[in-house]
Image (tube, rainbow, N blue to C red; front, side):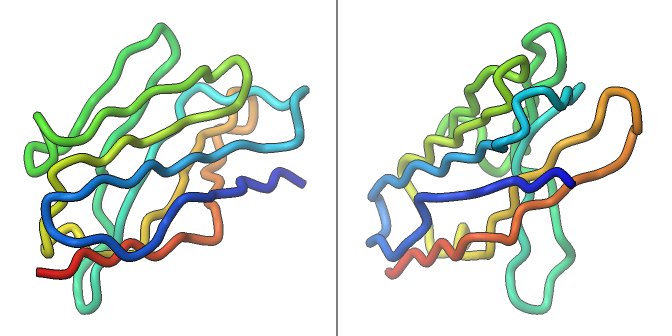
Length: 117
């Protein structure tokens, strides 16, 4: 079973920064993409950032210019550097990956990010 383990959430004031990390211990397992979603109370889960095989990255418009996604899919790890955080960035952030052979979606347990005004 593949388990994505997240770290780095917490409480920060508006304008501050946080860094999220995600990795799996199953180094033999292969993904075609890894990234981050978030879900705020009362809202749908939404894509924040993704890295696709070939080093293609994509960021949601709401975080462009503030967030940076990085990592190495071959090493099953992805990070999210969040700068200039806003109260509207408050949400539970989930690591997500897609299996190369299974095409299945895998999710981390989620990490809370709270931005105070």
